[in-house]
Length: 567
Image (tube, rainbow, N blue to C red; front, side, top):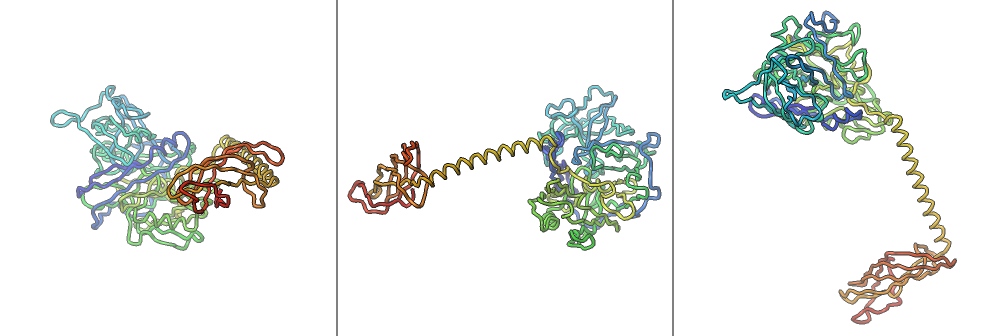
């Protein structure tokens, strides 16, 4: 995910990266799987927390209908790219021009590529020249105001401007946004054109007031909340992934579904930044028993950010290794990939959010397994951060309400919360088998390899059988002995001799090598051998000979009794 670097209140830059690897996104576009790598946040203050909103658990009215423009409600369908990225449409200008964005609850700015961008990949660009409501933002000298946002996968740069923006049925005027003129290579591969931030003003660098603030002031008739449903099935047409402003539909979850609310808290001074919630426990259960706790990773209270811009569950660095070890205990795993496994091999996780909401995360919510037993765990490192990030994996498991007016987050449950069991398996990118035609190709290739191996084995066996029956072995005579460091060449003769301990080679040939020091020599022999059966065999052999015998003089002599240790 691409989570930008923001300046916190103490002036120290804390890295909140969008580290959704472009390769994974590009792979998703072509129909293959990829994995995400998450970034991290760090809040510099550690004081008494200011609580926002109420802690009540249930909403009196279980269901509100889908978008109705007359009621100030707005429905945006989100395109699901293999449960890895959810992209919706936004419009800018007069007349409106549609572009695709990730609606990111982990940032607060809106940016899109402008028509002047020559390095924006395949992204659709916004043509400001055709809009009657476009206005460039300049400094006191009349120069365009520059902006730059850095991500783990690269950066975007450009100018700031003001424009009319349509979000579903809601039209906002005077929205400050970033008009991108340059994108780093990896960002050019992202599925979306831009990003629409839905967090708070404490994070805003460009869009001030924020989109949420503008909706509140320009559309007071709309309820000041929005709901996000992320389906785990990209082909679901009955209940597709969607974002509703001013509305929600609990009937998707069940007839008796209610919201389990947890308050948004503020750490440090200044304005609210993230949709941050307090987590009093994160318990890893025993795989064999969902009622027995193996370990609690939040014994002294943790803090989590509900973030639709992160694909997985991001774990603080000081807890990541421990969590991976706990959930993979007894399995054959390398990092977050496990082999010869199934979802039943992984434990359930219990997250307790303030005030007392227990929200299980099932193995099927955070693990994807193929039919042949390869499983991927949907955890990522929250680099340099003490925050847990509840990303798309968690929002898939729990239909989520972001209540701006009461500063709280609601998670939908029917009766006792039970993870994503209400709508089937949750998921990142499904780890699954190849298509049927690919399977046939793989089987054919494997068959060719097997046939080639059998042919080579048969040829080797036939030649070995002939050697055993002929009983011949090459030996070397007339081995030269070097005197001191004198380097010399000598004649090697390969002679067929009947022997019981069989080796390779039959026939006679001559070769020349070098010998130095205490009689070590090596070389190559080439010749034609005649076997007992009269067969003519051409051969080329490498040899290594050693004879520890005293030299007869300053130059080498034939030493008939010298026997090589290694031919």
